Image (cartoon, rainbow, N blue to C red; front, top):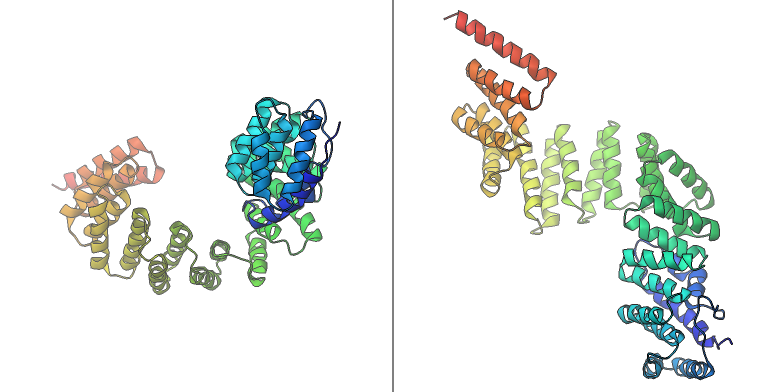
Length: 457
């Protein structure tokens, strides 16, 4: 016998308000407000005996009482139902209670109560599916994926469940599984924006840029102002090496005032690669002016570009702005990045003493910083302070990541001081670690100099 579902239908409409307030940021509001999701979550049909528990007349009466109380006071309805549930009552009562918990945003009790319902009736399809959605809301993506997959295996065939499963898999790095789920989601729920966006992300993450671009062009014909599609299209074009077209795509977003700081920095990088340096500088400065605290590495890369192209004045100003924006919020690694950039700018502009002092400060805090040791050694060498330079080269050579570079740098210094034999020894050691044609040629030249020096004695 079927129960009265007016209670469940009532909660369906109530749930729409909950989802609109706090959807997961990675899934659109449309996903949580989708009538197919709301209807599927709450159910608007009778129990199927093989995957749903039976409800006797006494429990039907309890549910009718709950409906009456829930119309005016949901908390009273919950308290009433909590008292009625025992180990012997049907899993349908636990299901109703879990759903009311969810409607009030009490996610953990909702999860626990759905689990109780499943202990009583393990093949309870809607409890299994709803548990998956609750766990999705809680960020328990692995558990959510398992329960959604089990609901599908029990016979759930709505597109929304496949879309949610695809999202879980993609977030967990299971790209192939995510793609399969999203494709089923599109097949069963073709109007789902999340399904198509998810499929695009799968294609981009597996470097299938041409396929992603074809899909995005198709989607943009239907929705010309879709921001996700414009951003994803720019990524696909970059992946295909079509940087001019990618710049156009990002510029379109910027002129729509829909490009964030990260996107503007990417646009600056593209302009730099295209040799449009004025445009890249404008983009970097605009991104910085937005005062978004992105990863410092993103801003630092822009500063590095300015150094490499000789825009030292612009770089000085750019680094000052970074320090103003980040204030005292630097991590130790962030502070190191900024100090190393400041040292590079000062070296490039001839302020070597200032650069040397910055590097000394970095080394004091990080004695095993290979990059700082090498830069300090080169500065000391240029200042003819060979003892300091040798000490820094030797310390850097003890770090495996910097050993070869330090040996070669030290050898070059020794050639400058005409200590050819020791220089040759260091180059041979570098070659034994990492053979390089250019170093082999340089070693041969040093050996020739060494031989000539001996013959002249």
